[in-house]
Length: 560
Image 1 (cartoon, helix red, strand yellow):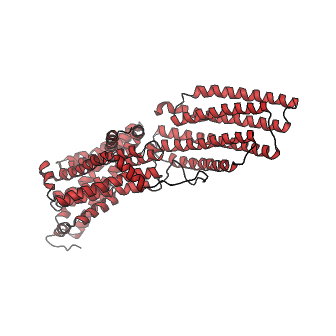
Image 2 (spheres, rainbow, N blue to C red):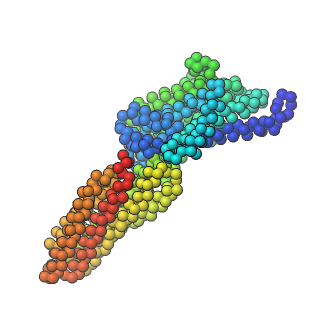
Image 3 (cartoon, helix red, strand yellow):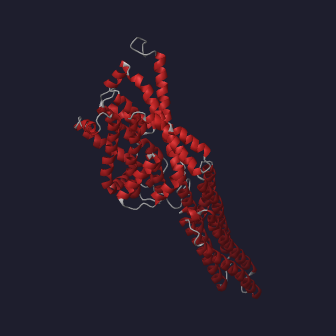
């Protein structure tokens, strides 16, 4: 508690300055969030597809991670994208390791921008960008231009926040008791802990560095102590990665913990350097004399660059270590699904990962329906339903996915997705319904198999051969449709239409030929009714198969 005296500002002024400084911090964090969100909305899909196509070259992965993070101004966003792609199997853990190591270096660009606040008039001029961005957003009718306006607004707010923080922090730093408070904190472990806690609280190492700069410039905080806090600040960013990993699948959790391992390794490495060579801060002062804000930003860059360069050479070892530390879960094929296979609802949904996650989940649902179709037809032909329990589990899983995917689609349609992504998500409702109907028709067929086994109803050799021919044609139709959905391509649509026409013709021929067999007594009336119902179900499955690709016409041409 401060006493009012000639040497101290009134208590009300102190409270006012503290509140204004906190308001500035809030504006800074809002600017960082807005800038990241609008960049992700505008360019996230393209960046996600760029990440999707990364190869096994470690340096290419490092550069891509750094580049995407420099654009998005958020290593958390890049990490979330990468974890989502690992979750769906589109990236290996090794590829993700390289990208996330690069993402850590990409964050230094933001800190370097923040260091510009020390240049005269830079903060006020750049803060004015917020107003320019607002005008662009309000006056523009194009979505991309609006998003760019949002980016400029966020950029301006970052410097508006910095300006406010500096203006109102300066008087506080002149108070003797405040100076004494900072000068008494010399324990290196406590300084590192402060960096961890502050960054974990504000969720941004950039914000922590922004707080440190005026403390260093005023002489309240020695550069060496600030460097120790930066070590903790980098470690504090790992909290986001831990949150991202909660509930994720094993390989995705490993990818998220690459970020944690990166900062633990950097903390140990630079901790040893700072403890062994306490005067190493003089190197930064020699590189950027009389520019304290640039000095601390350079240390942040060196931390991430040297740590990243070391770990990128050890990427294979990092992958092996995380594989050993985070074990695979063992799940038997007979278990009922209680969660999605690819969608991770605990991850913050964004347009960059939604498209891939949902598509993979629907593909998985379609594969279950395909397996049940094959099982059901073979059960009819062999009059054997002894392993029907496997069929029933798959059918329940299909119903589970149908219900949960539809629920998830409803939730994400409430998000501010780009127009194109919203259109794609809208078609997924139809696709899920078609896949669920295929599963229902397979269930109809298994019921015929149970009746045939119970009542010993069999088909003639000719009828059996015809069922096999129609089943093979239908199964191939479904396979082509699922593959087209997976590859996001309608190139096979004309082929599917020809196949469907042939299946329709074949179905009609089989019905007519079976009616003749019944009239000659070759097949019984009971077998005949099952035969006709079976062919009708297969024909409808073929119809729903082509529907899966038909709804893709509105979007897949422009997707890739």
